[in-house]
Each structure stands twice: as C-alpha cells, then as structure tokens.
Amino acid sequence: ATHIQWSQTFKSHANYRTLNRVFKMNNLFVFSSVRNPWDWEVSHYHWILQQHLISGDGQANQSYKTVSQYLDFNEYVIKCLNERVLNFNDQTYFLQNGDEEINLNYLIRYENLEKALKECCNNFLSKVEMDNLILANRQGTERNRDYRSYYTEESKKIVAKLRQRDIDNFHYTF
Image (cartoon, rainbow, N blue to C red; front, side, top):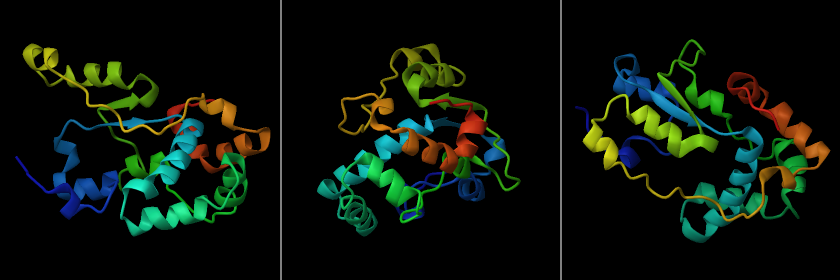
C-alpha cells in the first residue's frame, strides 16, 4: 500500500492526471463526486467568503478580497466569473485522464452523497465495515436557501455557459 502525506504531496485538489502519476489509477477502484454546477457556484461563493475567517492561506485570502468587493452573488457571477476576474476549473477538468476521458468505476452525485457513497463502498467493504461506516460531517457553507433562489436569468445563463462541460458530462439541469 502507498502511504503519502496529502498536504505535502499535493497543494490542494488534485486532478485525475496528477493522481494517476502517483497511484497508477487503472489498477484501483476509482470513484469521485460531482455537484450540480449552479449549486456548486453558490457553495463556492459562500466558501470563499467564509474561508478568510479560518484560513491563513494567501490564495484563499486573495480570493476573499476579490469576491468581497461585489455586492451579492449575482454581481459576483456577472462581474467576476463572467469577466474571468477569478477563473476556477470545472469539475470535468479534475476527472479527465490524459486522453480527456472520464474513467471512473463509480460517480457519485453530491445531492445523493450519503446513499451513493454507501452503495459505492459496498463494492469493497465487508458487511461489518459497512455497518460501522460513519460519514463525517461535510464542511458545508452557511446558507439556508436553495441554490435556485440565488440566480437571476442572466447569472443562470452565465453559469450555464461557463460550466457547459459539466452540464453535458454529468447531465445536470438548473
């Protein structure tokens, strides 16, 4: 078994191509999760705004300084994302191999995370391990509204344009 210190090997989120160089992914059971792109953008917006309170990470603080200058989520989408002031990779980028294909054994949709993760783990955990599987609390962002309520028609279309690959690859709708 390969043991690595994640924070020393990878700066943050690692894409499939990077992980494949370390782990030879074609020999492993590989799964990941994806999230509705419109929901993901709302969550990411709130995460950036919250992150400056808990992180000494210069990148997080710079993102916060950029995002906090906008009045609300829609202004952030229209003036920041649409104009590429901050440019974040889509989910497809993280899941594609070197041939730009997505080769996973199992794909979990975030909106069904707990159920799907248990189904996925059932493929390689024993009954005893499955009975004792405890899913850690997700580090969610503080929002109490459905993602759809954040959007205007304009911001909805901008996110659709920016995240078209994710919408196509993972069959999401608003």
